[in-house]
Image (tube, rainbow, N blue to C red; front, side, top):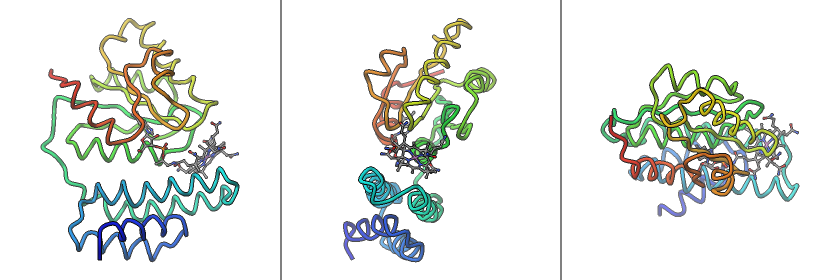
Length: 215
Ligand code: B12
């Protein structure tokens, strides 16, 4: 069976909320030694992107979307242990979370998995994270990068609040701030004084490698 048809079946399983099918094809992808990162990106994430489109078209509603995300998580649980981990890169410590008011965490979880697989030390604050906590944890852990995610226009201003808090405490220069999620753009990153926006998890990892952080 070809890689592309495995990916297609996994995406279809997410869209159709078919747990058995996602288990079958994720296991098949591992038997065929397809890199787990590729299956996550081209199978599971691709499926969730199709679900997003169906939601926008009002073909699917929240209960369906939630069930689709459960199916995606079943696939992730199978693939996650097989994501290849680069040598631990002790020089990069990251704090990541979804800003206060927002519980969408599928994208953040994927970014986290890709960052961990690149060997970075990632501290996940979860979702609906109180804005102060981004600053407190970054200080406590002596982090290098603060990553914030949100999928909602109503909560994106929380990212600016965190950056303003860093500035007020005179510690903005200590951190690289990366932001992402549906309504976020490079323009918004510039407007609020974040260092980077990236559109997806792989690009986020590439950007961090380019930063070449050394302690
Ligand atoms: C799945 C989903 C849900 C699920 C969430 C499950 C979960 N655990 O996450 C459920 C059903 C629970 C849900 C609930 C709600 N949802 Co919803 N949901 C979606 C949906 C369909 C898909 C989002 C998704 O997971 N995409 C797939 C992932 C892989 O993509 P992603 O998150 O964008 O992440 C990628 C990149 O953005 C990037 N990235 C993400 N974060 C970061 C961070 C950094 C630092 C970097 C560098 C990169 C990065 O990398 C990721 C991977 O490549 C979107 C529609 C859409 N078009 O996005 C609506 C959407 C986000 N939801 C929406 C709404 C309104 C809600 C609700 C308020 C609905 C309600 N009335 O109750 C609630 C939210 C309650 C709350 N306060 O949080 C709206 C938001 C509108 C707005 N204001 O902007 C959207 C846009 C739908 C719409 N068009 O109306 N939702």
